[in-house]
Every structure is written in C-alpha cells, then in structure tokens.
Length: 371
Image (cartoon, rainbow, N blue to C red; front, side):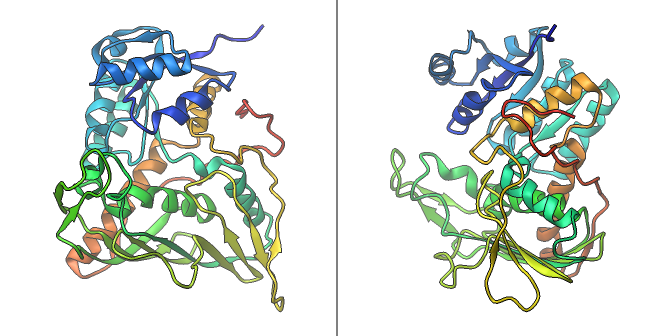
C-alpha cells in the first residue's frame, strides 16, 4: 500500500514556478496542494495551468495543516522572511537560490529548523541531474585520478535585455555571484567537497543599467552589488579552484568551458551547471581528443523540483536530503566570502562546512528519488 503524497505549498508564482509545477506532477512522493502569490492573478493563472486545486493567501497556506513543505519561489530578498514564517508555522521549507542574501539570515533559518525538527533546503538541484551525477561518478570512480584543481566561468552582459523585471539582479543579493554562483559552487562542492578558504576581487563596472526589455524599457537601475567577480578557492580535499562570474562582458571569445576539473590522471569537462544534462567529456594523459562519457544517470532534462521531491522522500525515510541546508548555507557563505575577500584585500577562511551530498543511485526510474 503506497503512502499518501506529501503536500507542497508554492509561495511565489513568477517565471520560475512553471517548471517546478510541471515537474512536481511527475513524482510519486509529492504533490502541489496550493499556490500563493502577492499578486493573486499570478497564483490563479499558475493553478489553472497546472491543475493545482487551491489558490490561497500566503497566510492561509502557512496555516494549512496538510502542507508539509513550503516551496519558496519569491525574489531573493524575500527568501529569509518567507522561509522563517514557514518554519514558525511548523513546515519544512525549500528556497529558490540563494538560501538567503546574508549569512545572518541563513544561520537563523538553520537554527530555527534544528530547534523545531524541520528541514531546510534549496536550489539549485541541477547537480542531481544526469550530467552532474555522471561527473560525480567519474570522479568517485577515479577516472581522473586525484583532483588537483578546477576552473569555472559564467560570463554574460546581464539580464536587462530580456528579463521582464530585472531590477533585483542588481540589488544586494543579486549580481552574477548570487544569481549564478549557486549553480557553479554547488556543482563544485558536489564534485570536490567543501571549500576551506577563499580569495577574490570584485567590481561594479557600470554604476547604472538601462532596461531594454518590455514592459520596463527605458527604466534606469542603480547597481548596488558587484557585477564582475574573480575568485580563488582552496577546497578541504586540497584541490584549488578559480571562478569568474560577470554581468559586464560580452561572453567568451575563446569559448571557455563552464567547468573543468583537473586530476592527476586526466581532465573532466563538466556541463553547464544551470542545466540537468549536457555533454560530459574526458581527456586522458597523452590524448589530444576529448572522449565522450555516456551519462550514467537519468534526469537529464530540466527537472527543477527534483530537490523538493528528494526532500519529501528524505523526510519519509529519515535520511538527509541532498539539496540540504548545510550545503546551501555553505554556498551562501562562499559567495559572500568572495565579496568580503575583495573588500578586505585578503583571503577569508570559511567558518561553515558541509558533507558532499550523497550521489543518486544509478538506474533510478524517472519520477522516483530513492534513498
């Protein structure tokens, strides 16, 4: 006899909510029971589109005794406020990235969850996709020997040319590091383990940005956070890493990789951490050509919501969930540390740490997230 699905309540029904609502319908362990948004029309539209049975206020959602997980898809500066309210209401919470915009708020979330016996987790869950789980298995199986170093690049000219409401990308808690850094750093921690020490330099190249997308075309936005960050990392395993994130450049003329991991016995080309699939390639000693590595895991399509389903399954079975609070806080701590290192002109020792999340089993049937 199968157990009833865990009820999920969605707070925030903007652009990213669509893929979550689509994919969560495919899991055996969880279902979306209600949608809430400050704009009720957005919540109604999403509920109708994806067959969610109820549209409620945030307060009504938090009072609903049947909802066990709050999926918090609000803008970054609201992540901590909504998540704290959910925890106070006795519900576990899964935040869109980043976990919060300050370490203080992140610590408050973890402390309250621990006190109440609840779960905190958050995006990205792309590291659970077929591309990155294949890379994890390749490293764990010793295909590149002992990891020596890694390099990551996220280069673009910002989001004001296409996003309908891009202001928050240039507020505190935005910028390329807090916007895209979670994907890259979570991927690296999954592959190499936690980060011990960080250095970095950061700048604001353009003090204002003019929106060229509709409906806010022509609006001038003041930039509050660094938009080009160059960082270095020392991982606890001894590997060294570099990362560059930018909203200030016109991409890479040399077609730099998203992520490469260098080992004593080869180099691994890691796919875009903003996706679940992608090509995995390997270069062995003395070889000029990259060797394609077949994906060993499923979930290679866009499966945002996989981390939520894994949390629901983990709550049932009592195991740790993979996109967990310690991981998401460690990534938040690392992102802030790049900015701190730039401001202080020295490296920063991270006070946080985490375990590498457990890999997904090989051969998982789509729609399942077994222990």
